[in-house]
Length: 325
Ligand code: AVJ
Image (cartoon, rainbow, N blue to C red; front, side):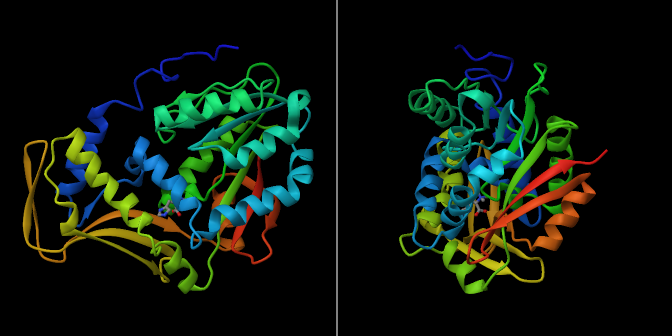
């Protein structure tokens, strides 16, 4: 079946437009302190680096979340009704969703809409899924889910907005709330949001997860500089920026930075940016939650916590949220 090719369908504009990348990089580097949005980590190389992170011994969230979905997939899907359309913002490689889609099966799953900013990576994931689950209707939607989401279903199917991987943690609380409001609207009165969130824990585990021994996370962080060099003609010296990541307990978040190892001037798209020795570019926040804080955040977005599943170490939670009238 051919997926609909809307204005933001695969092959359309959106994901590959250089302009928002250029504008956002220039604005972020001109700000004090310097900061860049983590969504720009995910070009094709960045998406592959992130997949490699998920396989690292130190990066527990992916395995913890998979173990939850594996253990509870029957109970989970039983809450969703008998005609379900699955929308996955920030789909990536779609490893976790496969379990849900398989369990729903051709009888219950009407369509799967992966939404991702890494267009080529998305197309490849869609291709693989169609081979693995030939009965599945896959409708990839290439774009930035903070800007565009698919339309609500019109065929009477219930929409499940699946948002795993603790991607929510990349958003400041106010932005996270706005995003959840939009997910609730997309789900509609009879739909649901299935959310995966990383939990607060021993900070040494968090530290290790973002400072892996093989340096994959460092390469992922620096990839945004690689991208600027390639796509914006920037002249970042990769060895002149240190990957620096830590848990900030008062704010309950891991922060990633790229710290300048010397005084230097870098040119990006023809614009000079000065760095002091030790000056940082803040590249990512990864908020960690507890069940109470995430329930409160959901409630502020008019979503009620219907059920929560945790892994046995209580490192990660999968939450079923339902829109409240
Ligand atoms: C995809 C946003 C959930 O915050 O842990 C992994 C990205 N950054 N290692 C996270 C990430 C550094 C990841 N999220």
